[in-house]
Image 1 (cartoon, rainbow, N blue to C red):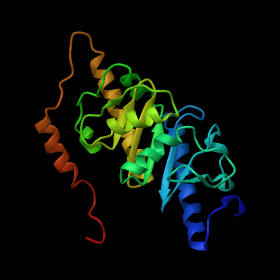
Image 2 (image 1 turned 90 degrees about the vertical axis):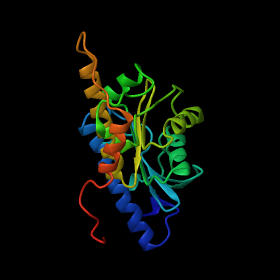
Image 3 (image 1 turned 90 degrees about the horizontal axis):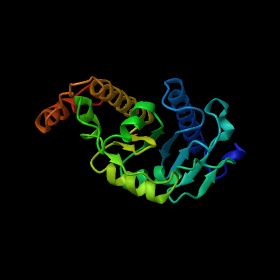
Image 4 (image 1 turned 60 degrees about the vertical axis):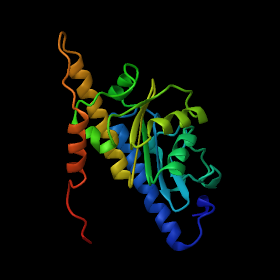
Length: 229
């Protein structure tokens, strides 16, 4: 794969190719599920000390194996002929300051709407605990800037997802699947709050810190046990 530049060794090449396939599938899913329109939003995954990321301005259904784009943690190009997403500073900031292995950024409609109304998504559902607690809104900054990346990091303190004011969402996880699931859950919670909040004369009931803490404890053991346990 000559277009992959700095990839060295058959094992690395296979790992990058598999990660790229999963990244493209996740990016396409954001479109199919209505979380982005056109080329808005972006997805990345960390492989070792490199980050594979969607390119700027290219529709996801046009991406193929030879369109792989990879950078190091300082943003230096390692592989690919296409320009990385303009939101690269935001993705790299997450990898530098968290244990993230994947990041999903969308312009989901309900989440973006909520980001224009409140400084924090009210705890209307216990699934907020899956993101670390009530989801904060990062103050607005021009897209693609270090200022936006800094605002996002502040909002992500002790969280795995946040809203970007007048912009969209950012979530991260230990895998592309987990990062995407968190994005979908965040959009759903925003839709839920907007729906409940829109009823004239009534205010949604909100969960207390104690209730959120109890939910977080139960969510920690949710799902099937790891096969090695």
